[in-house]
Length: 295
Image (cartoon, rainbow, N blue to C red):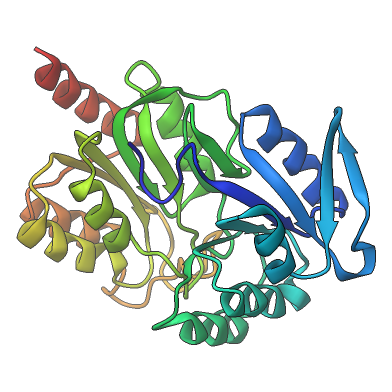
């Protein structure tokens, strides 16, 4: 099994006909993802040939869903148009919307996230690498050849640390790896992923990667303590980050003692999570756990 994305997922690409959308549609198809359509109102009715696969372009997400049965949308549109694209998908009752776009104004993210509340759509992102259930489907920009299927669940704020952790644990493989994004406002959180991995019969252990800024990791630690029985290992990026300076992600800023890597590490360890000082040390901690589970 996997969470949020599986072999039955049918994907439409909002922004498929742009250079970035086209590039990653090709890569997703190469990973076995069922990409069933693109959305671009200016090119509706056209067919796009990608390495011999003919993909229809629809004028709206609703039309794409009605014609193809799509249940996932991945958004590769410029930041200025992202809010409209996501709201269109929400209005069409798309179950899962994966927003890859970086640089989305925080106000826009807040508005489309609030608009989604109480509706049928789960949002992942923005500013994220997407998610991958190896051997089943890959939606976004995660390289498909890093790791195969297995029984580790991974949730991470950072795209590149997602890739590194998948590579370092490739001997075990993953049920699903999710990059949730590092913006101040995101759709799916660490807690959402932890809850889903806890309920997934084919996930045995969980890696959680956080970073400085905000209190998401502290809240996740509290959730783990109360609700997660599977082993969890963690890593928090940013131990050497200077106070008051944004580091990489828009949400990665420390103010006083709030949001520091040390504070997050202590909260996670208090919840029983083993926390590595580096990504490689974190992978070693998970390796110990997986070796123990396989005995």
